[in-house]
Image (cartoon, rainbow, N blue to C red; front, side, top):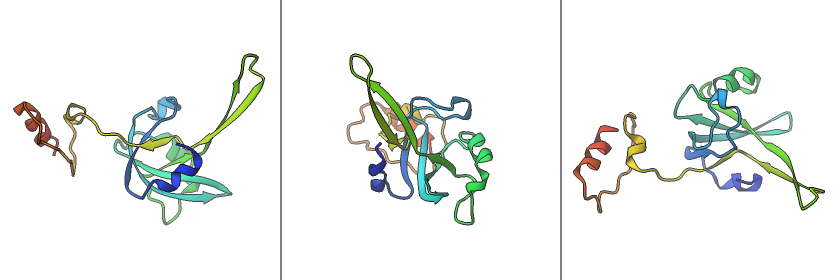
Length: 143
């Protein structure tokens, strides 16, 4: 998602990480579910704050950047900074494009089997075309 697209994301909207699996030891992988909370500025750096569904994700980041937190930022939120990356393009790799982005995108829908075993507070389930009774059972067991 480009830098300017961030204005379309609203507080408490479900988003996913979409960077190329950076900081995997900290749980930052493509598709990690999280909730966008807010954005702030710290020393002229724009930071977005997300709350991961799995609290273990981002533990190291929360520890390393604890100085970012203030009274408005909850300790369970994780800071995501702007990623700036130069990419060489062209036959001779002589042109450089600069990609500037936050590593999140709007979340996509998931098939119900991806939620199996989770304990969710809320779940939207469209049962109008369900032809297998097992899917309804799996859905109910997630709540």
